[in-house]
Length: 97
Image (tube, rainbow, N blue to C red; front, side):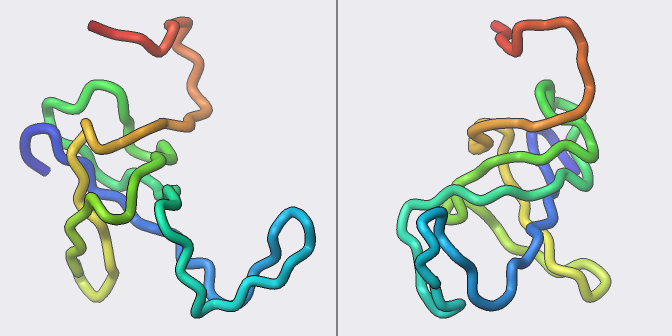
C-alpha cells in the first residue's frame, strides 16, 4: 500500500438480519447512510492511527473495490475512516495533531 491508504476486507453478512426491536430485514434491503465495519489487512507507510488487524468504521460510498487473488478488498484513505476498534492499549487519548 502507498501513502495514507488502508486495505480492508469487509465481512459479508449474507442473508436476513434482525433489528434490535426484532424486525426482520431482508438481505435485499438497502440501508442508506449506514457506516460499515471492516478489518485492516495492509496499511501504507503514512498511516498513523490504524494497525493491521484493527477494525475500522467507514462510509461504504467512499471506497474503491479491488480483487486480489480471488478475494475482494476495499481501499480507503486514512481520512475516510471514522473510527478504529483495536485490542491494543497504548495509554494515549486517541487524539493527535
